[in-house]
Each structure stands twice: as structure tokens, then as C-alpha cells.
Length: 302
Image (cartoon, rainbow, N blue to C red; front, side, top):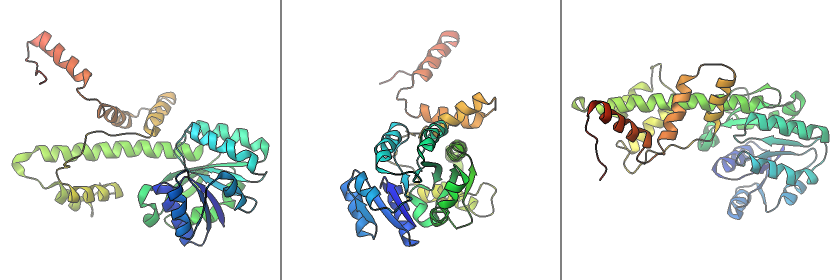
């Protein structure tokens, strides 16, 4: 099967390679000419314009968009629409808001285009491990793409599925990322407590290694954590700065809208926000208040 792929960063390039190894034709475009050249060198078809991308695909075309969520997705679709024909399919495999996906579906459907939202997890490991894909859209449009999903997934029958109508793929991926925030926070706090008990001299990498087999807290995330601790046990040279893609925020907003209590995911998001604050003003305010009512000493900055 043929697939157009827009966005040949690390994840996009790995997806293209996995598809190529499975026997699919991949035509890729990226604003980085080196990325398109690498795709061509590896056996794909790298092109330097959206026009050439469309021309190198047979109708009905399927184009997978891997660009940052929001306006970049809308701009990409707007540029492609005049080049494509009724029956062609747009696939958004990025971290888009599910409400945006529903709007894009509603705008494209009357024009005769298919729109599929494919929440995709796997990151840089997808080439080896396969990608987990949560797919939303019309049944016939999704089924036509099954060979692509089967090739990208960990196996043809595992790790992917059509979860519902337009927007549902990105909604499920949003919740997936919210859960991920909570898991990461729990691991981080647990290892911090282990490290703080200095008199016992606990080896964090050894603990992580023990937990990998037989433990109820074993996971692929723990496997990655174990590898990281082996490489850098003291996390030297690392800054306590944690970014977010936005999906954790959307998960919290959705929980509030639905009157669902989600304290763990919410607190993990707050901790990420706090990690970006130098000389945290909130903590300084707490220090001042404690001094005012209790006379406790305030630690001055140097």
C-alpha cells in the first residue's frame, strides 16, 4: 500500500522505515531537505514539495500528517486540499486535541475527503517495538488503512484498534498521556524516597532491575527508567525541567467538565509546571507567611 507522510522527524522517519520494511511505498515530505534525502537513501521516496508528494501517490491517496498540533495541522490540510481529490484520506497522527479533530472531520467530509485521527504512542522506540495506535473515524475509511496500521503496530492484531467515531482516537490518546503523567510521577517520587534514605545506601538501579521481573509495578516505563539509571545513576547534568505536550492539561480539563475526580493526574501536571519555575514564588510566599506567624527563620538567597 502507498502512504504519503508529512513530517520526517525522528518518529516520522522511524514510521517510514517500519512501513518500508513491511513492503509499503512511503512518499515523504519535510521542510528539512536532509530528512527527505535520508528517506530516499533508505529506499523511500523523499520529495521537496506537497505538490510532488501528491503526484507520487496513486488515487485514492492516504496522507499521514505528523506535525505539531494546532495551526500547523490546519495549515498543512489547507495546502493539501486543492491538490487532492474526493475519496482521499487525511490521517492526523500527531497529538491533536480531539475537539480539533472533530472540527476537521466536519469540514472535510462534505468535500468528499476522509479524515482519520490516529493517536500514536511509541516515540523513538516504535521502529523496533511497534506503535500503539488509537484510531478514530468512519469505519470504511479506517478499514481501508488497516494494512498501514498492521505494519506499524507491535503485531497485526495487537496494540492498535478502531476505538470509535471522529475524535475518539485523539481522545483516547489524550487519556493515555494523562495516565502516563501519573505513572511517571509515582516512579519519580518512589525513587526519590529511596535515594533520600542515605544511611541504607540503596542502589536505585538495582531496585529498578529487581522490580522489572515479577513485580506488580513492572512496566516498559520501568524498563526505560532502569536503563536511564544504569547510564547515569546520579542524573548528573540533568535539569529538573519537565515539559508537556498539552495532553495532560486537556485530560484534567476534561475530567473537570465530566465531574470526574482525577487528583493523581492533576497533581502530576502541577508538578511538571512547578519544575519549570526557578526560585519558586509560591514557596517563597510560604516561607514569608511561616515566618510571620511563627517567627521561623527565612533562608536568604545568595
